[in-house]
Length: 381
Image (cartoon, rainbow, N blue to C red; front, side, top):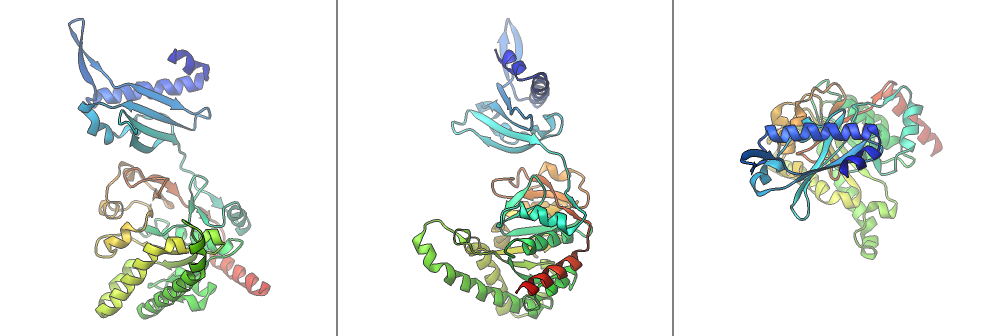
């Protein structure tokens, strides 16, 4: 009955179903995930039952593996991604509500990066994205959240930041940006072009910028105060308010420079950033931190754990993955080129199963584009 049902969905479906069944059965046997039974005085290996369902588009599917006391914990850690044929990758793993099956979700993934050869192309893509969302590629469109962006020199981290800033400026209603760059690099130049009053480079100026952001956040609280009393479980989007974003490039350099300041100043910085990540999501006040690597000294644990969206670009060190994600996932062993890396985001990918992602390539003058956007907006005003 199962065979006829599979074949009725088409030969391609049947072939893929057969490939997964054969490959996964062999993998389970090789891993010792089976129960020995005596059949006609001979010992036989009885594999757990498999239930494989692929959608009609052949783009994604679900595998259920029967649970058993003997191999319960082993199924929890089973890396079945290597047993999937073609370009299928594992996207999620969890146990069923009745604990009788382990469920593995998979889908087709082609590592394709968007390429924009002009700002008009980029602008058209932004218009197709919701006012409160950011896109990385056609597969990953993210509702705005606090972001930790990590990448060594040459990984594409700076361009990822430029992409994010340019999307925020291109929105029908541009977002409000506060930009800090202790290394006085491209991010500072762009921030200075957008608004000279909301950009900083020296340590003292960045501390003052954080103070200004704190004041702005308190103003947003007052804006929302009466509204929140009228509507349960609401946030800034329900009242058509725009995101307010604090972007700190090379955060580890800023963190290191704070060692020359008194404890009161350091505590103030921790307090402001802590308040943003704890309270900001409902208010629409967000923190984006970018740095080359992360460890316990340059990124406080509380701050890291309260930033649920993490993007790690390029080939990072093992310790960077462990510090940022709490684990070294198998997919981190892939070879990543410029603009490629891993994504962790609630509802999309977990630290145990991060998603491989890409950032767009911008083949046009970014700074000139930012200048023209600002000039056009100034002219309208």
